[in-house]
Image 1 (cartoon, rainbow, N blue to C red):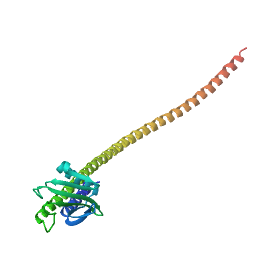
Image 2 (cartoon, helix red, strand yellow):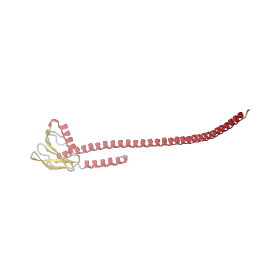
Image 3 (tube, helix red, strand yellow):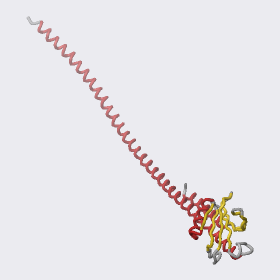
Image 4 (cartoon, rainbow, N blue to C red):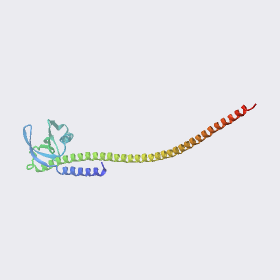
Length: 236
C-alpha cells in the first residue's frame, strides 16, 4: 500500500475516533440488578464490549483494590471515595453491556443521603458524567494509538516492499546488461566460428587440389616406370 493511501486512512481514522470521543452520550436510566430496580447513569461507547469491560474492571480494581467486587457481571464497591464525585464514602453498583452499536457502562451511586440523580443531585451528576466521559475518551485514545501503531507497521511494510521492488528492478536491469554482453560475446564467437569454418573449407579445397596433383604424380610415375621397363626389355 502506498504511503499516501495509508496517510488518508490514518486521517480518516483520526476523524472517526475524534467523532466518537465527542459523542459519548451519558443518560439517566434505570436497571434491575438482582431483581431490584436502580436509578443510574449510563455512557455509550462505540467499541468492543469485551475490551470496554476489561478496561472498566481494571480501572475500578486498580483504583479501589479489595473494595472492588465482581459477581456474575455486576461490580460493586462499598465505602469508596471518588473525590471528583463525593468527598465522603459512597456505594457503587456497575454493569457493562454489549449493544448493537457498541457498549454501555452503567452505574448506580448511593451518595449516602441520596442516590445519584440528574434532578436531585445535579452537581454530583455532572462530576459523575465527566468521570464516565473521561473513561470513554481514554478508551478512544487507546484505540487510536493501536490503529496508529498498525498504520505505522503497514507503512514500514509498504516502504520495505517499495525498496524490494526497486531492488528487483535494479537486478532486472543488471540481468539485461549481462544479457547484452552475452549476446555480444555470442555474436563474436559466431563471427570467429564463421571465419574458422571458411578457413577449413579453404583447407579442404587445397587438399582436394593436392589429391589431384598426387594422383597425377602417380600416373606420371607409372608411365615413366613402364617406359623404363620397356627399354629394359629391348636390351639384347
